[in-house]
Length: 440
Image 1: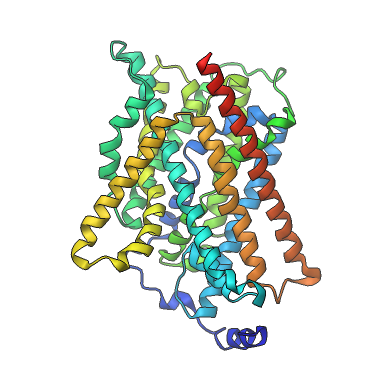
Image 2 (image 1 turned 45 degrees about the horizontal axis):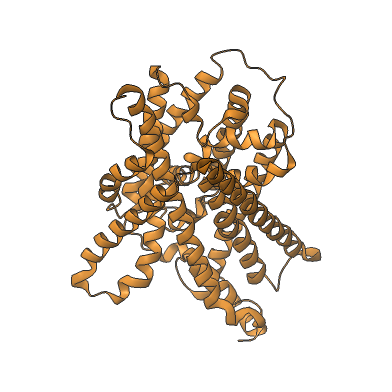
């Protein structure tokens, strides 16, 4: 298909409205859609904000958080917009992340069309790895929080964090049997309330005594900036949930624009992350752990509530993150499974997936390092590089005045690769250092 043929084809289909042809079994409201976006981004990432600021310094942290928030929000915007354009080009009511990548390449310049299948596979692989990593982080964070409380109040039962990962295996297997976003949105709303309660308790301890600013750095060691970027990207990005949420909305036209579901969700995410990161760093300085709740005292009831809240919040959010992995699996396997075996296949697959995540949590219970690896490697690819590439390819014949879309997306891709390479390098060095100290 030549470019001229595609242009004529697009003109014929320009009146096609994908929203009018969507048939959603369990549609979600704007409020629930925003709740899912916020909850998919925040969680362990929000509570890692103070640690990120300790790596960057508070001045660089504030500016960097706002800029990363803008970039991540823009990448989600162009992903959804490109997906809608692909829907119109192919006369399809909705598309997933990987399908959008495939069709963008398929309808792009002639030289890249042969890579359409490869682009889809890369997107699916990145998606699965990203959200499996997130689920591993959630297992460790839940276990760490519960272990702190048990160690404090039941000193006769001191267990390693790996055992707590194992304890939560069965409850997570049961929770992950929930299959519809409509029902997961209820858990997300409850988890958001618990997370907000944790946020307030953290602020209570942060402002509970006089804060010292004099010994806090405006700009940290530049060698630690990649770790800051990795943590912030991890916290800001919920790109894997974006397409399922947008595709399941009652009014998907409300997702983009201003005001919109995306703008509201990203504004809340940036505000909560920057305020907790800034003031958490002011309070605890360089002794911060992977989650600020792990720095709170274990003998006072507000802190105990915060630790319980965050454990419950992450526990309730787990199936939403796991949904992305199962969604990919279903697209490839369910059409090949006989109807009689689909139910048992769903149940078995979800159990095996949870076992895998718990197993990784047991093997590598390093919360800070897992967060940084997932943020630097997978979220850089999934949330920054791929959206910029597919928008460029899909709009190749209309890149704007002076090709500004090409230049803009080139900068985003360069930024994504910089975060990927530098973040992974520094984090791997941190892991090696930690393991060396453990063996000495």
